[in-house]
Image (cartoon, rainbow, N blue to C red; front, side, top):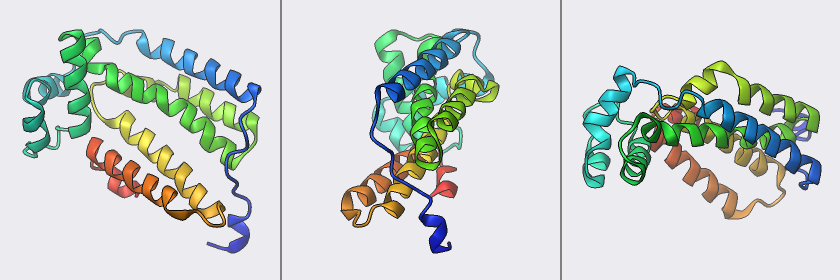
Length: 192
């Protein structure tokens, strides 16, 4: 990478009331869109996740590598969601919806590191209303966690590039996010 390219990157500017308001609007819009239809009938891969993994004990979920269908961290989150709220389609999908909603403010933060406030808001708005992201947020799989991990990894990576003496906290944060992202969906190794 050429040195002049790195100089255009910047750490996130301080939060303002405008930033907080814009992010709140995006999160509320994204959440309301994702809650619609969260309790619809399950797809085959969701049923397989429920029957083969979510109903298992925690130790069995963590130790089962027999299928690529086991998005381990997602299966754990869904296990606890179903345990706390009862076995239903919406409880099984709740972690995907929350991870999808969490990706919206993360996208805004990434956008503010790379562009203007208006462009960051537009990126967040596009993600909040994007059909495919909404669909994956209503699917009991780890794909929204994968996207959240990719966005967070990008944010931390930019911090590593732009901070004069980043220290170990950003390296540690990058390593933790990378590990969790890989645990939720193995394809995250390609992002790392």
